[in-house]
Image 1 (spheres, rainbow, N blue to C red):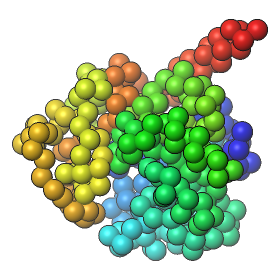
Image 2: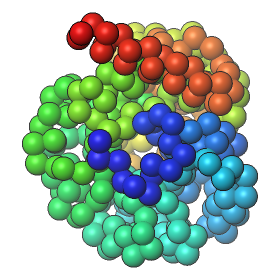
Image 3: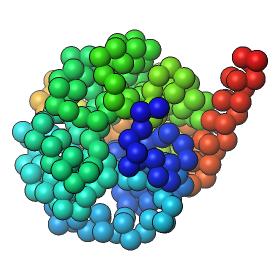
Image 4: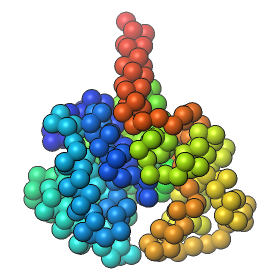
Length: 308
């Protein structure tokens, strides 16, 4: 496995709870890390850079000595006016894991490496994977077909195999991973980490509205719509939430990326991946991680038992 040494401490399961816009906060991050998986959040979930720093202090103060590492997502895009200020805070506070989106920049990577941090970058196709690899990132998050949020359309088997052909760093697989069995399958096909978002929305500590969590519990893969109409970038959304906001999934409008508009839209138009069909309850993050561990162990045991 190609998991950086700095991320191995306290890690009980190769899972990263994805940084979800408006959903991930200190409570979810802390509970995930203390349970033994990597918890993350977008810096933009705090309204100000100073508020972002306060969240970092809160998280650090609540982590157990044997907790797994935590990470922060930065949007590396011209429409994010806070990038430089938030990055300065990340460097000063020495955030263990930085996840970059919508742009892989060598200067950002060098800044994180300067204090011993790790950079993972999310990609949806091989062209973006090559550009990120050239920027010197430590890991690539392969956002495959069916993932929640800004998702790709490439089959995970094809994406992992092709990227592994030119990238020897950490590979993190995203897309419809909801159970410990899914985590085991991802590692067996060549990924080092499973990247799970939708499953962690329906947890007690998630900042999502109760109605949002319940909609995921009731949804299946057929209840997900893939469209650029909400944010300007193709993403997967819960069809009932589109309908509730007067958006007809059959006649979706065009939309250009705008961070301010996106923040307003995502409060009422809710995202989820096709893996929602495997989510059947809302429970504490710690209990979820323990369930994932049991399912992962059982899947691995079954695999090796069948081989011998």
